[in-house]
Length: 279
Image (cartoon, rainbow, N blue to C red; front, top):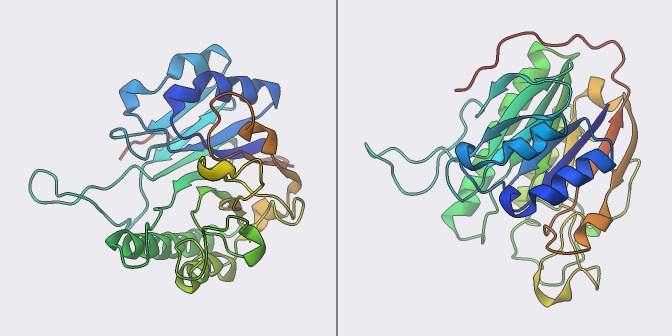
């Protein structure tokens, strides 16, 4: 079972590229981030034409997450418990619950597509929002492992954190920047403490997943490693290969991120036959 994550930076602008890559690379499940469209604007037909079902969660031209699968999709959730809100108050004075998380079960594997807030700067309210988002996600991840310790569970997406100094090649990121602050790195490390593993790093120890469009960052390989698949113990022990598909940063109109791909020996997983739920 081949599972990937990719911040596509607008699915409508890159649908042909994404669908071609899915077919060419024989991917079973793709977690997408930054789709940048409402559900009714998502280009479903192109995915369906090549055999993929898509669960998507998008509210406007910002953020947006989805899961595409050719193995079916069940038990869809569009937020996790305690997920914080941000932005301008909606009608009634409630802050928006942004489209940054979507969970789906595929062939017995639970996959969350996650788009962690950027943080912007250390003194910006978005930074506090980012840290709270990571903390609440860690609370849920801990609970999920406690309740179903043998579950094949993947937390996949754009984490907007470079956990190691070796994950930073972009010279514009220095002490005082987001993505590399001690608090962000500690928040990311909390997932390892509660039992999750960065399943790609042991098999693909080097390489970046993001290069800014500005200042020729990609030709200079001044990137960052901020896209990850964190697996539960049962998931991690079944990962057989992993790679970062750097070539997808080349060519016409690429995303500024590239896919992270893992192969999973899924064994005799039981398909989840529960009905699809949107909440």
